Length: 124
Image (cartoon, rainbow, N blue to C red; front, top):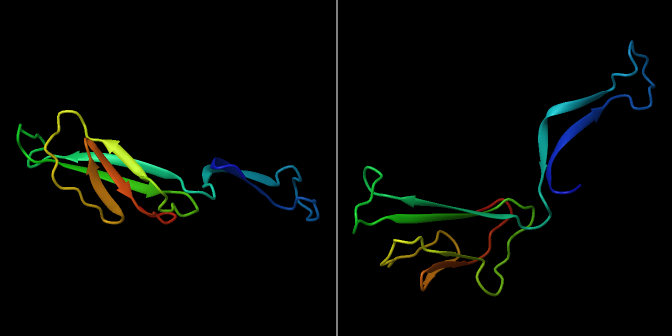
């Protein structure tokens, strides 16, 4: 089955072996979809800028850029040669000094944040 969202069609008594009042109503399409993930890594990254206090950062205040990398696929994302993730620091933000990661290795390369590591299936 191809990856994506599919309707689920259920059949009962396909060969009409059970006597029923109506032999034409043996199928039902569920009103919900079924998500089929590929047997491969399926990586998605989201980022959020966290400002101090009231949500407005004044010039010179510290802010936190949080990036979450998630694997929704059915296979692990391996730690391959080169970076698994890289992203430019948003314009107007400068003087980045600290980069950390809850797993793998994060670093600054110029105005880019880079990350290297593995992500298990359905992990982040």
